Length: 297
Image (cartoon, rainbow, N blue to C red; front, side):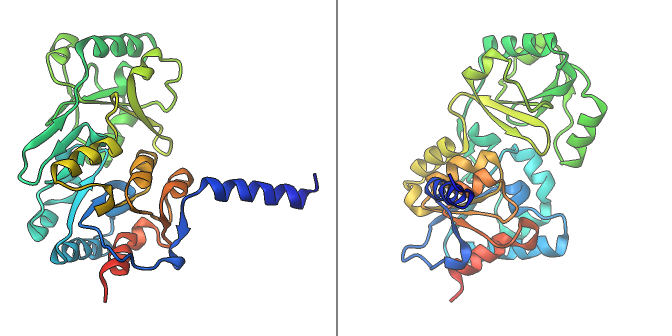
């Protein structure tokens, strides 16, 4: 097959498998979203305070337009608040509710009530700990409950640096019996290949290759499933919800929500599932850009 024809075939296959379109082709939909699910890391939050304030103003604008914006993140609520900062919550009046956390393992309603929490069984925790021990990963794993994090050994130095730099709660060291007595809802492993672990088929996992970590939640706990539960509680559905994100845990909601946006620095797999691909990176205030496209007159 001639090379030019082969390239055309490859491009055709790519286009057929991609639902996305460049934002330059965007036209404002007749029906605007009532809800807006927002990923935090690599999407909404920006280290630069001046740029981040522009996203904060865009968040406030959504509320002024009677849209309900909420976080839909792989973080827990505690470390989300620590990362974002008190000034955001004071200024916007949003306290993290409604919200979807730990990739759907933890869901809060509008009034702060806990709508859903997905927990690992003690048996499954025991199986994973045995795997971690036999693969010298005991100091490379930490475990989430609703409000705290734990580990069975002191996290290794590089891992601890990553935890602190990302505003994650430093895990408290506990015994296995103490850990099994807690309601564990998520695990983070500082390893991006757990393909040799037979227990992975019993859980939902997301690999963050850029950080070389794997996030593990109970089976069927993911952002799409979480959004379905939350929107049903709000007497809504995917046809009234927009989503914006960047990483592999955002693939399912990109496909699920009737309006979805991938920031310009999103993973390619995420862009392929988004309805629209933005021309601005997250730290170029891509979120603000979306709000303007939807709600500016």
